[in-house]
Length: 299
Ligand code: SF4
Image (tube, rainbow, N blue to C red):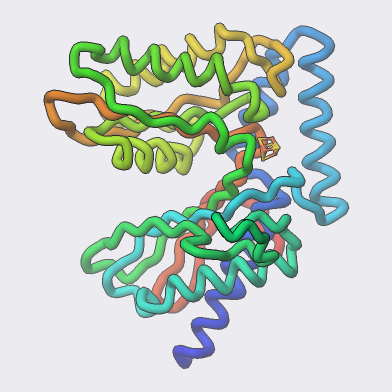
């Protein structure tokens, strides 16, 4: 395949995939919503879950987004250093977002800061957000797509704690965010927690944590235990579906961490909502692709 042809093909596949993920939730999120919905006992909580399930059916049958806020588009790349289109990827992702905005369609969610006008294309200065990891020697591209809605982005918070605050301080920070802003994000929530040295490292980890499949755990057993404890604690707040009370508040809690400076604990929280529009697609160098997030893709 000639390079120009391949670039157009890659742009088209990614545009179609982004549009599709706006209408169909990932398999793990759909399954978890079913599981949580079955555990609710009050009529109000049951009705809200039924509305969510009906919403998903109608999004497919009417070919419309599963939530009206199709978010700011974010991409997380693990791109092989030998992937043939590495140099073209930023332009490909930009063009794919413009194409998806027109064809899906997606809501216009890119307003130029200070100039205060909506570009109408979901692109702008630094948007879509693109976060790179280069994988030396690989010729594949692993791409996570994410629709960062306004409500689910709102609880995002990062700060650096004094070292003496310890893991209790991390817990207090996460629960403070959940009790103050959690219900703005259309629960049940996927809660991503990043722990590192400084705010920017913790913040990026907290968003990357949202790309992990539901049911996955931090590889460190102490971190995995903290994920479970936070999940129990946040569930006990009783936010329930859409924040209208219920047994469960979260889809899960994912912690991502690095080593850190011993004098500080950088911590951040990012939140995904019940309509967690995450996609994962992997390309080989011939542009054959595998979609891991959605088994029954139709586009
Ligand atoms: S929080 Fe999620 S479900 Fe609620 S309006 Fe925003 S994108 Fe939609």
